[in-house]
Image (cartoon, rainbow, N blue to C red; front, side, top):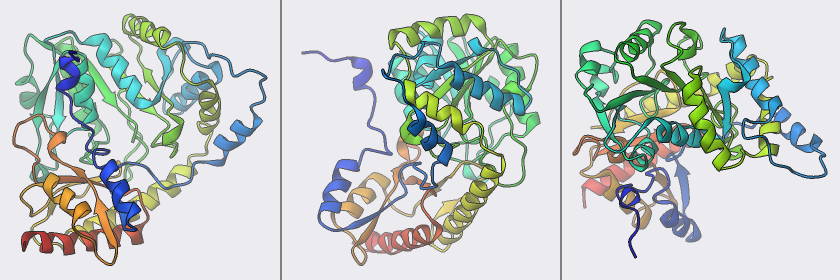
Length: 396
């Protein structure tokens, strides 16, 4: 029987591809340091659990397709605090940022369309673009330039008759790059001038490490028809398993079409929305503490990586990932060997292989993305294991 050619063109997620093999390794008693996935070990704030325990409805009923009003209003309150006024119809809850992305791309892309994305990018973007029938037109970036892409000539060189949108992640996953206000305004100008959508994945907005202010594309007036925001509680509040996100836009036509998807899947999870609403009332000091912890982890990881001969990496300015090149021939083969054949004192490491983070053929083969979402001592030990493993792998 024939399966979808679109799905067949998609690959497995590099963050989860090795999970079955990793489970076998753990069953043999080997400890794995998980640097492969952005699953924070920071405690989910108590108000989330308090709201769960307080839920006492006799029936867990469908939420409205437009979202639980308490959650929508909580999101609106959060944005109001950073100077953005939103109406209820401009926020639609989703099953995490992932569904917000899927419904956005399904709404704006047709077969044969193109979307511009700086590379390296979050690999699951490629799956959603492919399933929408479109393809990614990458803007190549490089660690030597701090993954810079906000240049008019570079961006406009990618625009053609098939282009429908520009997609940015700010702060960047996997690069940790951050746009300045002037750079973000430039991207907005280009989108408006070429009648394109600017999709902004802003799920790491709080995690910036040099004192930069919270920055959202919604804070810039005059671009309301162009801007689409992907947001989520997963990273911001360390609540990945809640699977609550939202798509936000002031473009009424776009949001009206997105509602068709919302009604098709009936509703986002009622209880999770109610519990997540409580998170948006967190005092800003919560983020100060979490940000300091991630800064420590980032500094630990980069310091240890720079002790490994041949490793190339920059200093991320936001999010919680490091993209780096390893002195190995193939990161995928190296990861397989790490799980099947290597351990140091009964321990090994799992990372996300870099090639799927690129659309340009041949790029990223010896690169990896490392998440600094485990504690600093474990990060130090994991990178020490990586150093030992690289030496052993290259001596085979």
